[in-house]
Length: 232
Image (cartoon, one colour):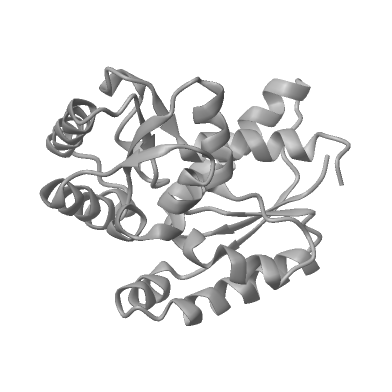
């Protein structure tokens, strides 16, 4: 099995979910006591979040690029950025290493297309919902991407940073997300992309009348598939 390099800590709540899924999926595929070969570099999310808010994306990208180089030196055969939002600097990270970066938006788009859907609603941080780095990547795969209205975007962003990143799960917030999902469906969404790794702590398939695409799980599944393949 190839070694999976994890750029994590953004937040560590979702990184813990990545670690659980990678090991669970490896055991399911190989059986017995098998677990995933992986190395983790966990950054201080407070530092990254400050750079996000201040719009200092190049500096944030260099923090992750340094971490990526450390992972490659530690033996990683591939890299995962364990957060949707920081895929804004994915090209900067990929350029810092020689091993492949498995892009989260690509694995998500592949799953949506495989389901036969084309028009999707996107939930995530305000950066992910409002900027082109993620929406545009999904659209490059032929998808039509809808996002919530301003009020819905504010709600989703606030819950992510003020609750889910801290491991806080409120039923009231779940109901608010479900209302946002209903609005997206009313606007024509055929499925919902949970485009923030923490959202899966709050929302599952049972909370939406249309299919949901949990990006953390999809990313982990694609990583294990690649790690167990003969592809370089």
